[in-house]
Length: 147
View 1 (cartoon, rainbow, N blue to C red):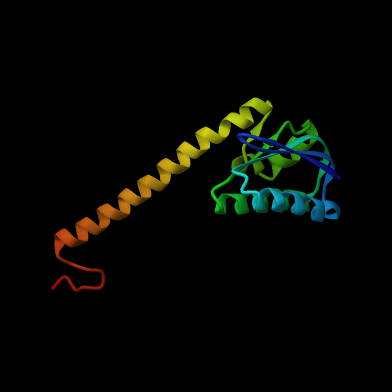
View 2: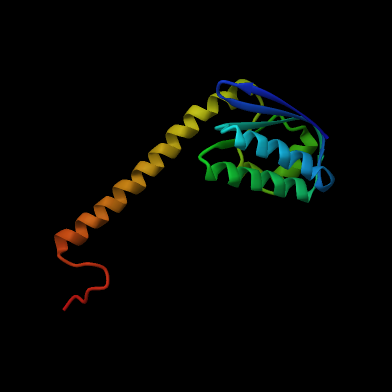
């Protein structure tokens, strides 16, 4: 497997050529780790030249998405071939990682993703704050008996 990286203002694109399999896991993990260490906020995996993905490759994609989400970064897939897309669909990868057909769409998705993540964080903060206000207004604290 060969991986070429392209740094863009909106993120980083990894152009992958070859198979995403257990045998190539070290190369893939190193490329994702390098992007993470560079504080990449949107990593796009260009799958146009990926011929095959095995179960380990699918697992690597999910782990990469989870690790990037932990550091508030996004992970997207770009232009998988029909056969590779079918394998990904069978494993429900599109429910976890967005897939785009056009590079421009993938690059623009970062702004929309950031807004939705920010809105969700803000909603959770409001709910937590509202819960505290209710507890204070009711005069009870967690663990207090109602009598």
